Image 1 (tube, rainbow, N blue to C red):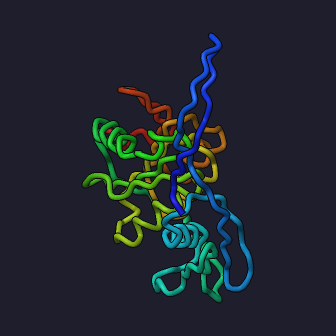
Image 2: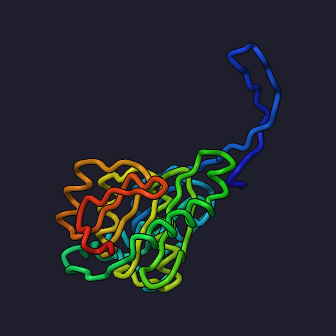
Length: 231
């Protein structure tokens, strides 16, 4: 199934002008995630990178996937094979002393958004990218769901062997609490969002020692927690 479908549309202007045209629109599917034999959640997502989605979901929710055979994709079903209870990893993170130059944050964010081809065509995708503080962009993922975009980016980065403790996540969405909680579960120290943060996301980031950056626009950004990491 294609990520983008071309359909016919009629454009109507306030002047009364009518134009028959074609439009690129995003497609979506429902994917079921099973823990063992039990259905854990159904997710609306773009029809690609389902293995990465499963791995990212497992990592965020505390399931070990060092053996990749534990994550299996069958059609639109993802099975995480485990008999263990999830582990709580956030308390094991400690404080990260990584630092990054402010100019690099702007550069990375622009690069991630420039690579968002599906968003440019449809306006219907969220962007989630992951970079390291010592290099450049490692992963860029687009998805109709901001949560699934993040899961897929994390799963992809895991497959590439990225050290999450030295990583920066960049997202086109607002900074919601559940997204920041997901980053904390993997000890990711710096999170950058294009949109606005919620109070709960800021409060959690301060407690979890995450540098939360939002409202990235042109040459300006707001840092809501741990600004000392940004030089």
